Amino acid sequence: MMSREQADAIAVLVHTLRPEWDVRGTMTALAQCREREPSAVAIAAVRAATTESNRTPAVIPLAGPHWDNPGVTRAPAAPAPFDPTALGVRQPPEVAARGVAAARAALRGETP
Image (cartoon, rainbow, N blue to C red; front, top):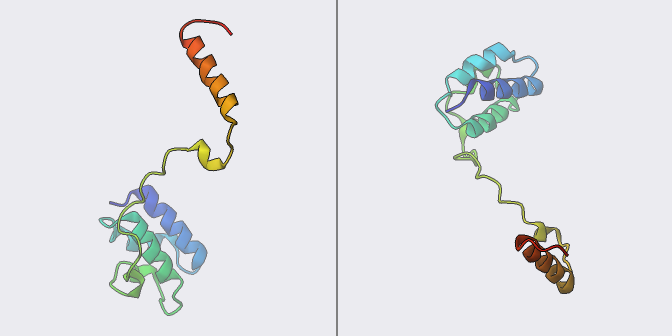
């Protein structure tokens, strides 16, 4: 379900692409799409706005090529957790071993 904030953002984006489409009219059209997935609405709205033969934003909620295969069926998955090894920075084994030994000593309450 699309929130008011998401609809506002989409309407502003559409207005930047088609300045002659006012934000208020675009919001009226987007209100008819409020039960759809916001990412699919955004894609359809951009496609509608970039099709010169579309005269007004009223076309956004209507069936048409701007809704065909939007490529997004649901919100994207959460990003994978940060993996520092993906950066390609590797410590030599002896440096890593010293770090592990120091961490274990600290856990036992020992000072290096």
